[in-house]
Image 1: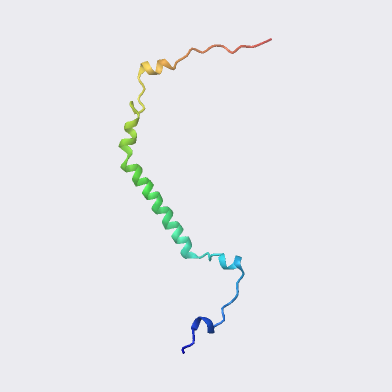
Image 2: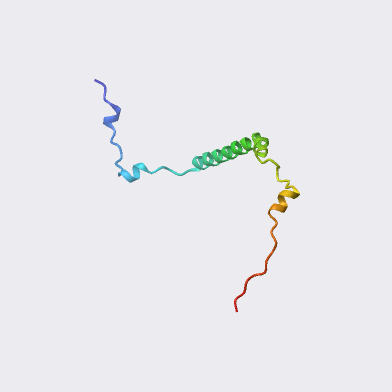
Length: 83
């Protein structure tokens, strides 16, 4: 009967905390950078694709009419001062 490789070689013992820790390396850094750049490009692309629809929500697109501006024009009153 052939010897089982997994039982013949002793494996190093690690505690639970050490076994759960990941290794920080350059490959992790580059994956993080690449995924952040791709996410930013996707958001920018989605915003660019829907820019006309988002601008169409505002009826006057930022151009206030004179009547609308006068509606919010209130006269200034002097501050009340108590002696």
